[in-house]
Image (cartoon, rainbow, N blue to C red):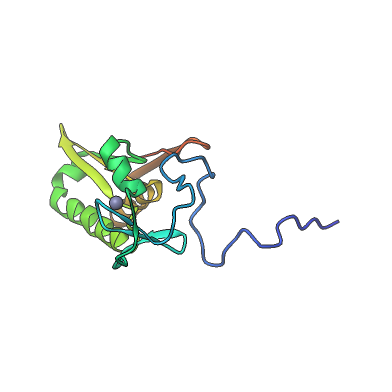
Amino acid sequence: MSTNKNPSGHHAEGNVQPRFEQAIDPYRNDKKLSEPTVCKDCGAVYHQGRWQWGDAPKNAHQETCPSCRRIQDNFPAGYVTLNGSFLEAHLDEIQKLIQHHAERERAEHPLKRIMAINHQNGTIEITTTDMHLAKGLGEAIHHAYQGELKTEHTPGENLVRVSWHR
Ligand SMILES: [Zn+2]
């Protein structure tokens, strides 16, 4: 008995990212924005169903994009916490890696941004506007430096907490 409830296929080839459970994200609930819409804060353009970088046509509608709204509300979607003596000893390179990773992601995905980086008492805390960015940062650091990586995500919540220790 083969039940084929999902003929469109959920597994895109080569997509190894585990998907976060689809939750109702108040910031992504774009209430069917008119296209094109330009974010009046960062200039990202909503076009073909997603936010991207590009030139907005003169007649574009104006809205604030989900990431700029999260930044204004100071309401992160991801927290990345790093600590340990290895971190302290390699602070500069690790910070560069973080910045490099974040810039690359942001260049492609306007909604994936670092909100803040705080370094206090031997701990770095990074907040992000996007869960996947937080997860990706943890994975990039773990890939480069091993150590201990933990990712906590409660299904149904729009929040991920990533911690890395070495
Ligand atoms: Zn924006």
